[in-house]
Image (cartoon, rainbow over all chains, first blue to last red; front, top):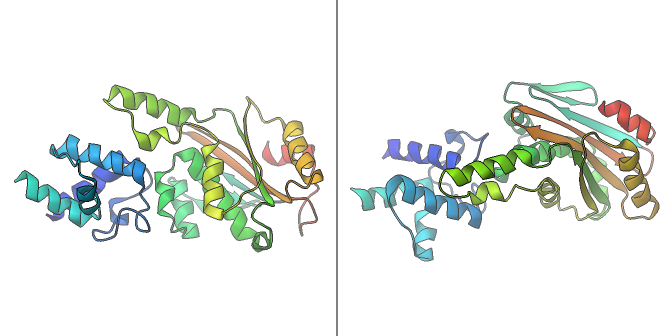
Length: 84
Length: 195
């Protein structure tokens, strides 16, 4: 689980072009959107594409999206639930 | 008068002739030095990072900025390569399957003006020009006219360019009145500071 979270941070940095950011800058439990990492709707699109590309998971329901992309923790949990 | 001058190069940040940071990862070093705590910064392309970082040094160096109204402060930027760095990345993202929205939003040079305006809630005049070399007479005339017609009381002048591994930024604070330790506002003085 911890490995997956670290991998997710690297993928988030790569997909969102957060060039000067390090994985350690992203706490597992801090909101990715709004006040936390400051992501917005454009970034949400990138994360949806990222999840499909790397994990074969499609998030089509906006309500699911809010829950899945809330934090690194919630993304990792969703991936583990749907890929094992 | 011309006040604070910030100069950012690949490994240095110099404010009013004094080196404040020296690092191979100068943009991150500048961010950490200022303790910016502005996560949106990391989403920006390098052109925007340079503009936002340089402006932040100006703001920290001029507490009197807070006394100006949000539409008194204007932005005038110029560079040679426009947003070509992000344009190329955007084009490359096509070949990898799909365009990236996160890159696409930076495919205009004037986005840096918006990023600075959003961060500081400045709503003054904004202009970004693209020329092979800065035309200091033109830049001076734009600012002088807006001072004369009371469209602005202060300017952040930025000469900010980023392409491949070559990047450099000059950010200069200019006011329509006296600045302690400042130098007279003329096209020649601007040219001498920057070149």
